[in-house]
Image (cartoon, rainbow, N blue to C red):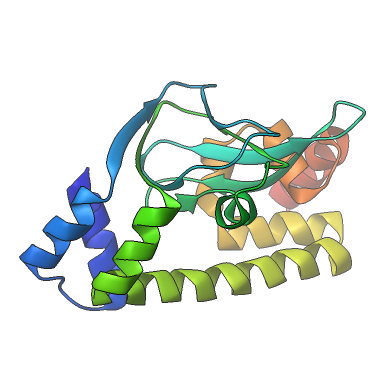
Length: 194
């Protein structure tokens, strides 16, 4: 599992991390296994972890006052997941994070993240690139939600994250795209018919 993290850091930073530096990084993480439907984070609790997905699939979502789910993020292998706002501010989260599949995570705390950024140049570079990518992805997701039609949202998902279509149920994909399950079904049929 730690080998996956090492390969991820090497790939993202376009460098080979020295052995002694990776040993230091490895000590900052612990393995956490989640069964399908088991939670990493509950709404209204403080987020304690930044998690690297070694295997499996997770979702991050909120539940509104009417009981409807609103999925904001998915994470699969080689992705990170956390409620960054709650983690950084140490305030209660508005989100749940649970496993959609049995999952193995490498988790670390805010304090350990800060130490890694101070003492590991490779980890700092990786974190910087991760933050940039997160910012760009967030902007694209906001823009898609505001400007795209239902079909455009589905086509964008197909192009940007085709693996999501195989890993997550239709109702979850609909929630992620901000569509009703009925609209999602109609759009999917239209796209596949072309």
